[in-house]
Every structure is written in structure tokens, then in C-alpha cells.
Image (tube, rainbow, N blue to C red):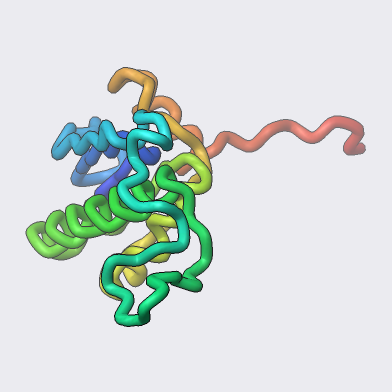
Amino acid sequence: MQQELIVIANAGEARFFKRHTPMDPLLPGVHLEHPQSRQKSSELAAQPAGHGSSDRHSGGVSFAPHQSPHEKEGAHFAREVAGQIDKDLAADGGRSLVLFCSAPFLGELRTRLSASAHERLRAAFDVDLTSYGLDEIEQRVEHHLHPTPQPQAGRR
């Protein structure tokens, strides 16, 4: 049976769990926090929108797509989480990867995953489980990975 790396994340927190088989309990691992995601946009803005310090033009105006300070912080944290995923997958060889992340962080994280992590990605769910305790997380992970079939009404 293949080992699993399960990542539960949103733009402010990421919790890593491992288990050896689907029947084993989740083993808590790394816990990353990104407090900047909870700050006000005005506290995050280091430069006025549209201006870049690396511009070599006299006006200093950048034509990059607009990103809010929270979007920039989300992208930064997604890179950090993707880096930790790579470390965990490299350390444990044959693990598959399962993501449980809130939107839009799930999309941001998926764009930051390495080719190796993409190859091992077994499933990704748009659900935020970061506020739950370990017992509830285990139940919800099981529900998403192995849903019980619902009886269909009206079949004869």
C-alpha cells in the first residue's frame, strides 16, 4: 500500500499529515503559519500599485497584472507550502499527495507544485479543514477519499 502525504491548507495556515496506509491514523507533521494573510491590505502594501522598484524606465510604471496585497501574500505562502511538500516527498520516496485547500489557495498552490509533486498528486479537494481538530480531520479526509455510496431513490 502506498504511503500518503496529506496537506490541509488555506492562505494563512498549512498542516501536513502522513500515514503509511489508508487504514492508519494520520500522523501530524509540519505546521506552517502565515500571519500576513490576516493583516489589513493597507499594512501589507509596501509600494503603491503599479510601481516596481526593479524597473529601469524613468517612470517606474509596471504593466504586470494587478494583484492585491493579499493575493501577493497568498502566492508567497503557496511557494513556501510547495517547497515543504517537495521536502516531504523527497524524504519519504514513494508517497502520494492529497490536498485539502480552500479556494483560491488551492489553485495558487497547484500552480506552484513541482513536476514531481504533480506526478504524485492523487487528489485535490476544495475544502478548508484547517480549523478542525485531528479526530474531525480524520473523519472528513476519510469521507472525501472513500465516500460511502448513497442509496438512489426511485430505482426499481
